Image 1 (cartoon, helix red, strand yellow):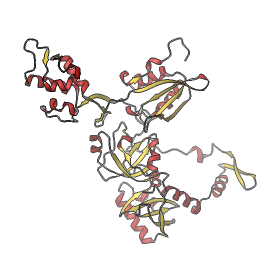
Image 2 (cartoon, helix red, strand yellow; image 1 turned 90 degrees about the vertical axis):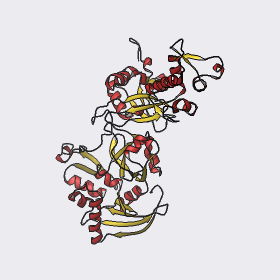
Image 3 (cartoon, rainbow, N blue to C red; image 1 turned 135 degrees about the vertical axis):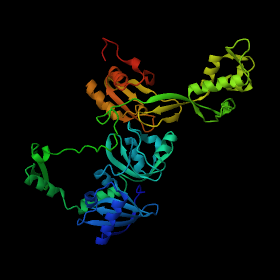
Image 4 (cartoon, one colour; image 1 turned 180 degrees about the vertical axis):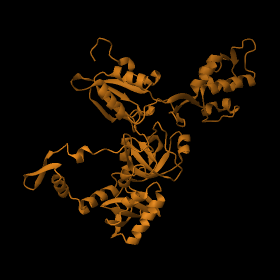
Length: 459
């Protein structure tokens, strides 16, 4: 909504009666806020302005500005918090998590699509279609966007996390945020010079004018009680754990099960069992369908029970063109393996305590490669961690400590909304131990482990 510049219609100080009404509205819309928190959000005596504006698409929006920052906005008689407010009350709304690369798209006015969601070990928050939600980034619980759920949590999981998940109304760095920064600079009663002066009076810092008109901090008393007593507040027990494998919750590997989709070319074989094009089956279900079809249509060879006669439907399903007139029978194992090969691949991912997520195609393995950099130095590069619920930044931090080597996290070339981790040197041995022994991921889902340095060889 605020992806482009808007036009301000009016900017007036709020009246006492409107201030009281706003407090009552906030208490009604956000019942989890206590009385003190409502009074803190909508202060009784501090400056509070009502800004009426028109968004770039013509929507009439009312913005409430406190202390120079927009704290709430109203659209079609619905009240929404801004990201400024959510930073103070991060548990105010159900929070969904996405990757940092997605933020740029949200700022540009895009909605949040379900493939961009990160599913934490605790599962997705339970919401209904139309519920107000917040969006945060992996590794940082401070919300960066506010939106409305386009479907319920159950519908999101049933869709295989595909399609539009949230209609984004406001995001960090959009035009409402720059407006807040401008107001803060112009109207804030706590100027930087006054702040420095106050800190110096409390003997926390020493300030000197080293050049004309420029004040510089020349000393800090790091043992001052105001500094030593500062504590970063811990997330509340109800807040979502965002970072897998971090201090919040231990990482648990997902259960990954191969599945098979019925293509149009094989619908005749499966329709007798109640399946249609696009139906998703497990391998055992495919086997049952084929066996029942062969027995029902009397296709089991009378002289050799290990062979199955191929009728026109089976021929079309499992034979190549040059086999159509030469292959009349197939052994059971060959028939079943050919059927599985002709079906479209899919897979099911289930994290502990969550509903299964079904996706088409084959799951990409965690890809480990070695690359040459400047001065012929080797680096280890790992991709596709996100598919297994791993945060690349957490993995990079762990490897940096284990390997005592520099690590970087950057966008993975050719992969949409995906990050890669780069570690200096050949660190595949350390990486393999982390993925296999600590994260307990199956070896079949990791490729490149064979490139680890051999014993006695220099990394």
